[in-house]
Length: 149
Length: 167
Image 1 (cartoon, each protein chain N blue to C red):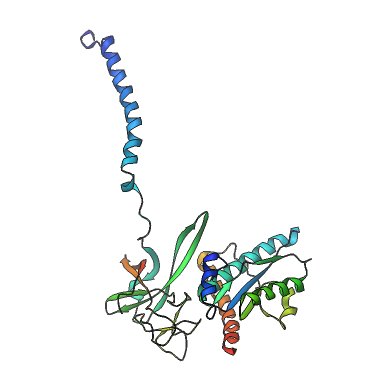
Image 2: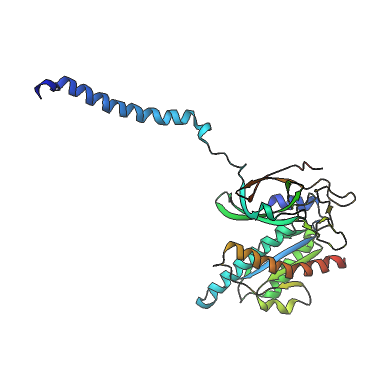
């Protein structure tokens, strides 16, 4: 499910089945060095999360991406988002990012960290296979959590 | 030369008819086009999308076939890649939609080692038989949709979805 009015209606009706939120965390940098990297990282994460949504449409709600800068407090961001999604009734809340700064939150939150792969110049076919490979890394994380109950 | 002299009257007649004709055509053409517009409209949908799968490579085991088409969502154009599970039933090619009828996840053939030779949905454990029939007792309430298929120059083409005709 996407974060759209139609899909959220569906979520409200089917809360017992749609119980997982997936939150992309995307860094925004404006400096010459970081801007390109942050854009390519965001592109990668958006493509991948859309792909995950397609595969797990009936169980995962993909929220709108959370964009932050390096100067913002990560603690504040993650706790605020987490609390809001708990209030919405999600049983499982996964964060997905390619910024390694989030690694220190892995103990308290379900954080999926993946190295960013520049997709910009890739052929459609190659992009597909790269994303499928990445998806294969993510599935076990999701299913192990789901099977624990 | 003196035999074929065009009189002033004739010359004016010809030129005025010519110019008048153009003007009349200029006015009438858009009107005529407007009147028959529904016939000229291009048909959306119903188009077959080519895949790079050869029809001769198919067997009775379902394989994943990707196909890409352009989707326009208001101003946002995007390339969408869809998949189908394609197998041969005798001589007939069957293409099933991978979208679970429960809540829309993507199902996989042999997706769970406990349920061999079935389509399995990883979200809530929905199961389907090879022809797309939903297994009773699992969440889905209907069979998987089917794609229309065509073969052209030995390659597989995939069309619109329709309700399952095999179950």
